[in-house]
Length: 490
Image (cartoon, rainbow, N blue to C red):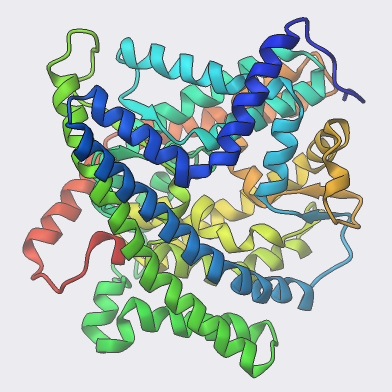
């Protein structure tokens, strides 16, 4: 591994990209997405006043989403952290969460080039018909920058690093296309895709695992979705009550005081009730733009695709889905238990509240909200992700050191990582040969390539499954009387 950043000859380009990244970070989704939506509206032929209103709706939706998340996730996270501390071990590494690691990734300098490169690659793929996704979720380009950053830290080569970032982007966009229609139906986000690397990367394995679970006695036939629970137990099966009960469970096993337990219960209940409504505002603004964009591309001579998906952040979408959130909270104690497994050298902490995003949301979509299958599927994937996050800890720590950002993190542990970073496991495996000039051994590369091959095999085995699952969900929706629930209330 390198000990300090290696300067580029293209300093001006890096500085320009750095300014762009800083502007994007300063704007955040609440400002950036309305600007993009307004521009899309004008480009695709909508009136300026209508585009302006739709942009405001998207902005207000994001404000509502982050207001709900900001008010609820902090205290819920404190309770989940208490769970980890109650049953904790003295391990050499600690999970500091995705946000500081995102800072490490951008602070390397060279990685900010993934923003202009990311746009260029996306445009080329759109023009050549290789993807239908226009990724408007610019902030999460940092997932590709992280992939580039790991290779850069290992090899000191910025061309190899940027190549790794491009590979991560291409795979992410292809997976976003593959899962788009199922995501639109299940999560209730028409006209969109979810090119969120750490979550969509689990889709091939989640489909394969669910395909096995469907054939498993008892598990395959058990219907444990919010709709079925509401049908059987009435008010006790509604998301607002399920959230309260799950919050009580997390508070009790964390051995928190009674007031904290009740607060956690109410906040989880609020999260599952309010967030889908905020996402509804977001969709109200996105839907007309998506429809107009599809019409535009269908009649365009420049593009090979007859429709386009607007790529949005999967985080708020996953956290608005009851089965995904409930399953993620149920898996939090299991994530802590993984710290006792041999080979795991980090204590899960900060990312425990986002398990729903990087392990559960696609398992929930594939199983149509079946909580039993989602928990089993998520547990398998979470185990793999935790081991990968442990393996990455030395490289993430080095990334923080050479970027100068590690000093900003209050962590007394020898190593730092983020459990969610393990979510890019097999995509990093696909780019592992690029790290051969560095300190990574042939054995590690062989394992990495093996994970990518396994992902490809899972995809080939389940290639038609998204369409089959979607058809089944649509059929169930037609056959089942309307109970007032929406896809995001699942």
